[in-house]
Image 1 (cartoon, rainbow, N blue to C red):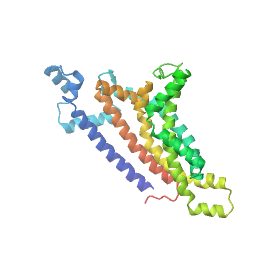
Image 2: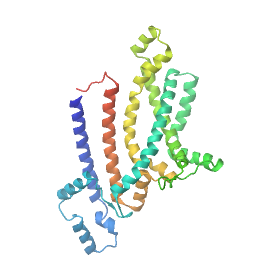
Image 3: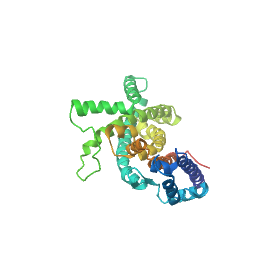
Image 4: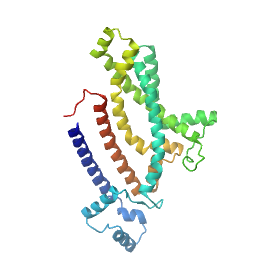
Length: 313
């Protein structure tokens, strides 16, 4: 296990090194260069040269990459010339809001989808399975912005119970937590349909295993077979899905946050691409890439912890 862990961490570091090379290359592939993007197309050659010298962009590319990588490892991801704020400061401000929004949505989705998937798998090809499958398929087929719009129409316009914008969230101590309900509801509904399909398939596969037939032959009640034996092994795919969702927690949902004007990483990324604030864009890309690597690593390790049959030699 320790050998596998060392190999996976080494692989993750290599992947992250390639990601930093790509992000660094994107910085230098900007139209007119990074300095021209900051100063604008009307900047004089003298101003461009002075900023290049100030930021070390007149040095060789390997030296620039070493400096940039060293700054990134220390948490210095550049400076937002549109918001006049360090990128790391912006991420530190916006990320906790995403952690709350998407974390709550994923927790609720798993808490609801696991019993739904278990019910579908146990009642496969019966009335309850057909009704739930078609309902969840319809929900899964809807884009997140459509679910959000439907929620706004019903709960904000037809029944004025909830606010349709969450821009005020996190701006003060007395923030109205009701602004979170619609964004969380939108993300939760989409994830329920996503997770439950995997749980259902896993339950059906596990019901065909020998240990289930043995437990039934011993007279173990069906409910206990489902909860004590089938459910535990059926949760392994969910672990993988949580690992895949880790970047989603870090970056937030761009469409949902733009729809509800929620001040998270998704909205930060959207605003940065509107204003061509490249340091912010690439800082978010680097952070999400790191989350992808870490999420997959944690999912692999959780597999080994939950299933003693899995061994990494």
